[in-house]
Image 1 (cartoon, protein in one colour):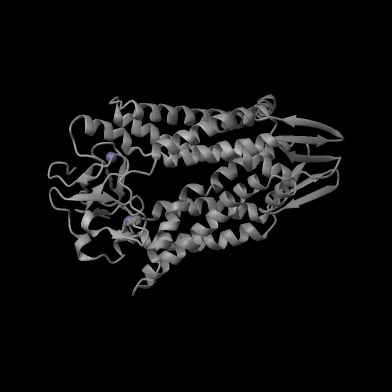
Image 2 (image 1 turned 180 degrees about the vertical axis):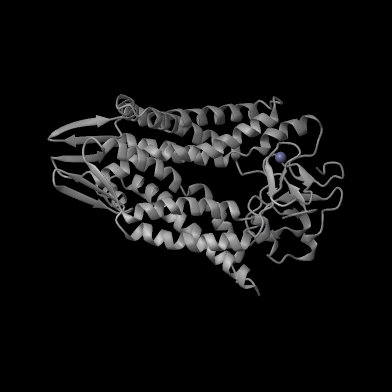
Amino acid sequence: MSAGIPTLCPQCDLLQQSPPLPPKGTAHCARCGHALHRHRPNSIDRTLALTLTGLVLFVVANSYPFLSFEMQGQMTQTTLMTGVHDLTAQGKGAVAAVVFFTSVLAPGLQLVLLLAVLAPLKLGGRLPPGFPTLFRWFKSLAPWGMMDVFMIGILVSVVKLTEMASIVPGAALFAFVVLIFVLAAAQAALDPDVVWERVPLPADVRRSPAVGERVIGCDICELVVPEQAVLMDHQGRQRCPRCTDVLHVRKPESLQRTWALVITAALCYLPANLYPIMSVTSLGQTQSDTILSGVLFLLHHGMWPLAAVVFTASIFVPLLKLLILFSLLLSVQLRSHWRPRDRTRLYRITEAIGRWSMVDVYVVTILVALVHLGNLASIEAEAGAVFFCIVVIITMLAAMSFDPRLIWDALEQDHGGAPPTRRADKHNRG
Ligand SMILES: [Zn+2]
Ligand SMILES: [Zn+2]
């Protein structure tokens, strides 16, 4: 908790003083409404307990059979890694790498990093060297762990296969489901401010900036760094004295990068929807499935809630994200003053929804892993899945490279306000 500590809003760059928070209270930015600080009682103890539980579940989820597929007396048994192996064997190594990273590696690393950070805090004494770097890595991994999305992928896959064969859940599946909730609870219990406050800081950084002094906000630990206290590395880059992340007044080349990524994703969106994402061979007959035909299949079988989920996640969300990013980019380039608070909110939506589009990539992975009984029944990933995976990853990167503070810069500069590097000011304390 950061009562009385100056805070630069990471989304609109307003310098403000966070008020002392009541238990479970939240401080929102006075200008754009972004949640700046949230008080989480007993944060270290609760998060540590959940992390240890999560690590046990993670080992179980990766060691035991996940799902079994039985058809006409033949059985395939899969673990979490089977789909990754099979995709690689089918020449879709890039998709396999993304699936492995988002469903196994990122959640596993998050748990290990969280343990490495919280255990020394709990045990007390001096923090180990590299402590801020470990927590910085944990924070950077957060958007990439997608076990909850994977779970929706399992549901869709099981529904698709129920007519064809019987699906038997394994011990790992149960561990996996509980792990999703434990990991979500750990993230909700964690108060990053409590962790960062334990990192020792030199006295010239701990003070509030003087009126008129230039300050830079750290994107990772959200420290407000007075310009004189900025560390310089041997390449001449400015670094945060607390978490050692590179400091930027604005994300570097934000507009150019985001434009390039949005255009690339838009170009890949067409083949992702036109090419089949997989081909299904059943009793010697082969049939190709696009994303849309997968939705229609669910509709025809009366599974309209799942059809709605897949349609929203795979077709609507990527398109919506691209449209929002496109209009945000355009509005910044035209120096628009139109509803900056709503535009910042739109940006937050694009950040939050993008990962849900991975559902169809997971469905293909799970189906490929479960169904390989030769001519009797087998499923292969096709080119559409590769393009689709590229669209999801690139739109996520595009949202990350866009800097929402640019929305507010045009307003400030046109009203004769401060240029991007903030000057501490007595008046804007929320
Ligand atoms: Zn703000
Ligand atoms: Zn920092």
